[in-house]
Each structure stands twice: as structure tokens, then as C-alpha cells.
Image (cartoon, rainbow, N blue to C red; front, side):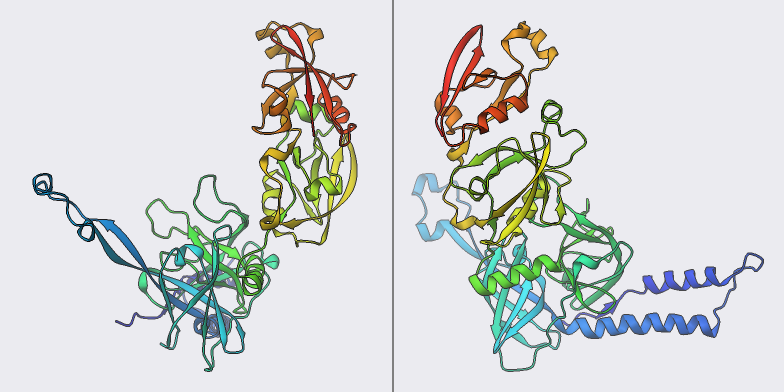
Length: 475
């Protein structure tokens, strides 16, 4: 059954109300009718919205998927007496259908590419699309990427097909008009309107959705079936791919989120070229610095990602990034919190130099790094150097453990399994007194002494439960 195509008029109502209020003076009462000038402005808005719908509806498709689900059938209590059922009776196959949206983003000769969400395609065995004009095509899956929750499909035709105009999501501002186009709840070719509510949104921890990108937030109504559809601006340019909603009921409450189109552009290019997304790899373990590290490393008031370990033979090691560095900027992007690195590093072009600004021992320096492909990286977690996190021993902990002041001030907080520190027998709670004969009084002393060993061994004298122990780290 054909669903009614619709466009919301909420935005026009707001515009009308705004014009009436603005048109009234402080002395005049609010008019009950609009002037011809007001109507001209409203019709201009209306014509703009119509133009957006006409331009974008043909490039948004309905994505139909079928997943073959195998499910064990329930067994009769009499099976105990008459034997187990035959294997073919113990399992049945079900055709589970799903519906989403997609955007026609590219054409190379006869081959046409459609972008949608990874979660729309899932593990489906059959995928087809239905265009706005009713034409239907079986499609092939070019590539899927759970990290951004995007998937690229393709079909072949010599017929004319409308192609979306992709905009620039970096130019979006809160308050910009936004339109969501898709197939919510099976109502095909639905257009809803609203504004850009926020940019740079991130998924909450534990959410099963792509976390290698930030998101555009909009109050344009998005519901189930909108996934993979277009978020567009007043020019009809696609600025995002609608992906998920935040809702306690499962319905739209004005909290919809879209993958920025600039992220999608990179995904499209990689998938067409490689069939997958190529992610950059740096080779560090990092996190936010704790209070003791901030004070000891002279990085108070700085934001960034603190480097705890470097992986052997990684781009970071080759470029000269060291444990104890605080990464404060990558190229032209400031690092405001450590999780910014998790989003930026994968997007860096592989085998191309990028500029890292770091704070080392309290001083700013610049490091040029050539990242490699995550898929091609050879180092594993066991190659982390030194493989231990250290923190300052606070006076409260010292008192609780009844430790004398002369036993040291830097304590091992964590040891990475399989690392040189773990292999050498370093333990959580060990107090580092010296490295290669150099007295360790602060966390800065620890990293300065450790990094001065270059690629050699590090001999640590530690205090452990009332005894002094010598631990040799072999890089």
C-alpha cells in the first residue's frame, strides 16, 4: 500500500508567529491578521521548503533487507520417551524483514552507490532498494563499517538516477534549518523539519552505535525507518546521515542524531577504493592525567591526552613521541579531553605526515608523525613500553600504609599484562626509588630517567613491602 508523502508545517507556524510579533510595535497590539508583506515572506519560506523537498526526495531511497534467522524449535515432552527429533526438525529458518533509508551519493558509469547505516544492513542476506519514483533494484554490499555505523551499497543501471549534493558539515551552526528525509515507521518519503540543535555530540559509554565519529543533533523528527536517510540544509545539500535517536519510549522526542557528511565522504571514498574504511594507527596507550601527574609533570591548566605507553615499532615510537608526553593538539585540532584522540587518530590519512603538539617535561614541542594503517599494524599489546602507569604517592596513602618519607614518592598504579614491566616482575604498589641510579622523587623524574635510556634497559630499584628489590626492564 502506498504511504502518503508529507512535510511538517510546524516550522511555518513558528515563522508566522515570529513575524507577527516582530511586526508589532511596543504601542500596538498584536495583529490578528497578516499583511501582504508578511504573506510574501511566509510564501518565500514555503517555496524554499518545497524546493528542498523536490530536490532531496528523489535521492533518498527505501532500503529493504531480509535476514535469515535460524531458531531452534520447541521440543515436545514426549521426545524424552520417543527419542530426539531429527536434526532438520530441531531448527527452523525465518525470514526477518527490516526497513531503513539510504541516500544515492555517487555514480561511476553504470554503477550507482547508496549510503546507509551499518545497522540497517546488519547481517542481511538480501538487500534491495526502492527509489522515490517506484523503481526497484537488488543491491550488493560494497562495505560496512561499525565504527561509524555506515554502509555502502551499489546497483547497476543505464537509466537516469538523481544523485545527492553533499554539503559541508563543518560549516553547520546551532540554529540552522534542518530537514530529515526518510521512511519512518514505513511511511515512505517523509520530510520533517527543525533546526540543528547541537554539533559535536558523542555517544554515551556502552551505547552500541558507531563511536569513531561525533554527531549532529537535530529536533527534526526522526523515528525507526529514518536510519540511513538524509539530513539536509536549506540548499538541499546533504549534511548528515540520520543514524539514531535518544528516547525512553522508542519514539521521537526531538533528540535525533546524524553522522556528519564530511565523515561520510571519507567512508564513501575508502569503501569504493578498498571495500573497507582505512583507519590510521599511532601506537600509544593514553588517558587523562590524574592530579598527581598534572602537578609533577608541570601540565596544570593544560588539556590533552597523557601518553602512558608506546608500542614497539609503531609510528609514535618512530616519530619520537615518548611516555609522559601530553598531546595537546593534532594538526589544527586542539585536544580538550583524551577521548578526542580516539576520534582523530583513526581519521588521519595513512602514510602522510601529521603535526602533533605535545608538552614534554613542562615544555611545548612539535613532533611530525606518519601514521600507518590500523589493519597493517604489527605491534601488539604485549609490546607496550614501559607497560606500567605510575602516580604520585599521596600523604594519605603513605599514612595508611605506614610508609616512611624516605621510601619514595612515585608508586606503580597499574601493570599491563604481557608488557616488559610485567615480564620483569613489577607489581602494582611498588614504590620506584631510582632508575639507572637516578633518584626518583616525582613522576617527572620517572619519565625523564626512563626516556633517557633510549632503547636500552632500565634498572629500577623499588621498595616492596619493607624490602628493596631490583627490577630490570628490557625494551
